[in-house]
Amino acid sequence: MKRILPLLLLFNTACALGEQSEKCVYRVSTDGLRPECPVVITDLPPWAESAVVTGGGHEIPSQLDKALGELVFVAGVPGTQDFEVRYSSEPAGKSYPSRVHAQMWFKNPDKSLQAADTLSSEKDDMYRKLHHHGPAFESELAAYRIYFDKKQTIDTYGKKQQRLELARTMWYPTDEQLEAGYGHDNLRVFGSVGVGALKGWDAEQQRMTHIDRFRRREACILAKGPVRTVVEMRVEGWQYGGREIDMTSRYILYAGHADVRVENRIEGDYADLVFTTGVMKMAENRMIRDEEVTAAFGSDFPENDTLKWEREHVGLAIAVPRQQIVSQIDDKASYLYQLRPDRRGRIDYVFEMAWRKSEWLAGRTVDEILVGLIGSVRKASAPVLVSRIR
Image (cartoon, rainbow, N blue to C red):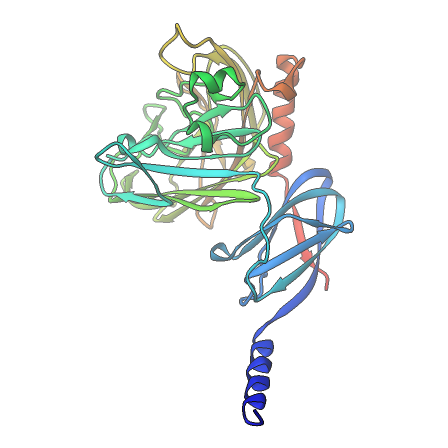
């Protein structure tokens, strides 16, 4: 025992020395009161495997996306608020209830479904190989899916009640689920931009172009909760504008939000190339637009079966960076902005959807919904400054 005890003490001491922890305080500054404000911290210790965030005397659910090098959380920020973060080299000892969800399903030959976080192809053949045709993601307020095809259009799913639904409905609710108040796909996007898809632009024909010639495409779910989802669509070797470029489109949705932050990164010879995005036109359309924000409200059927489904009334909005706008030329199907990448090759913006049947919009007029959408995407586009103070 005299020999074993020192060895045990030495072993335990080595384990203790291997554990690392650090307490940091961050100051978050915004342009006024921001409820459910997304906060992103990027100066993580390289050894951190977990983190606990506190603010205002209570613990705040957070998400450490180590592969992305980010710690994120949402919290009310009244202009300026300090938050304490305790980093640890040990894995998290608990988990938070998820307020977001993301999914992608590959169809096996026997028609069974296989969950996947990453899928790729060198052909335009993934649309029919995937359940709901691409990755889908949601918060309690809204859901979206991205078509894994040459259009890469974003489609919308409205919520009647504030809850997560896709794990149960898989985008296509049953009649029983519809009767129980579940939401559903609420627009047919057809050949439009949907809401917030980034496409090519044919200046001579004044129309959108699709990603129809490429070397490889990939869809990835990079994060799926509990605080946010991160989904990427990447195309490599896109032959566009007489060049060959790569484009990665990252879609970020936070808990408590219906707005989606889009980060498009263009790589290669993108100088002077012009891209386009916007929102689709709908029947009975009402539209409000200024230099950097467009919001539209209209109606359409969610499916081609117009006997089963009734017309839905939906609002769509987008806020784009003013300094990157080249022109505002619409086509037959969409209200559009033409944009150039910045010096980093980035085109970033925010889009959002609102559905008339959502219970939290009950009693609001069309103008009130449009004004609310405009204010929401503007606020989501405003910077949130995070600085470490100790």
